[in-house]
Structures are given as C-alpha cells and as structure tokens.
Length: 115
Image 1 (tube, helix red, strand yellow):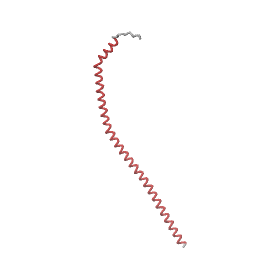
Image 2 (cartoon, rainbow, N blue to C red; image 1 turned 45 degrees about the horizontal axis):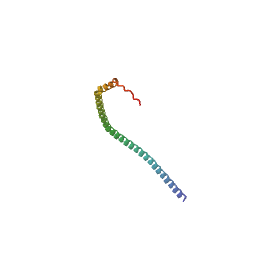
Image 3 (cartoon, rainbow, N blue to C red; image 1 turned 90 degrees about the vertical axis):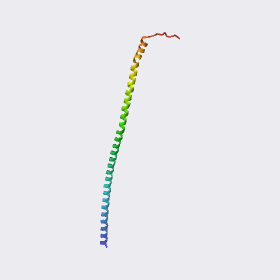
Image 4 (cartoon, helix red, strand yellow; image 1 turned 180 degrees about the vertical axis):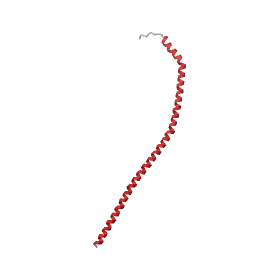
C-alpha cells in the first residue's frame, strides 16, 4: 500500500510540476502578448498622429493661400487710398499755404476789452 501511495504521490507531484510549467508558459505568453499589443497601439497612434498632421498641413496650406490673397487685395486698396489722399493734398496745398501765410502776415490786432 505504501508503494502504491508513494506512486500516487509521485504522480500528483509530476502533475503539479506539469501544471506549474503550463501556468508559467501562459504567463509568459500573456506578458509577450501585452507587450505586442502595446507596441501595436504605439504604432497605430503614431500613424494616426502623422495622418492628422498631414491633414492639418493641407488645411493650413489651403487656407493660408486665401489669407495671402486677402492681404494682397488689402494692400492694393490701401495703396489706392493713399494715392487719393496724396492727390487731394497736392490739389489743396497751394490754398492751404496761401491761407497760412495770410494769417501770419495780415495781422489785425484787436485791443482787449476791459470788463
């Protein structure tokens, strides 16, 4: 009976060692799979980020062209208005100078009134 018990115990110990090996392999596989999943996620994130950056650059390029056109148009309009102001100034310049000189040279003194 003790030989039979000893053989049974040995069988149980062998089964426990085998189960321990299976559990260890499962843990290693799980750890490996977690690492792989993490790496895959990082790759997907970097790809998605690169895609979105490209989209943003395209969007920015399209809309900055519109801004450049608006700036050019505003610059042309400002130049037109400056030219118009200069022309108006040159037309009235002689009259303004004449009025200023008249005010300086044609002095008409007035005595102050005492209250």
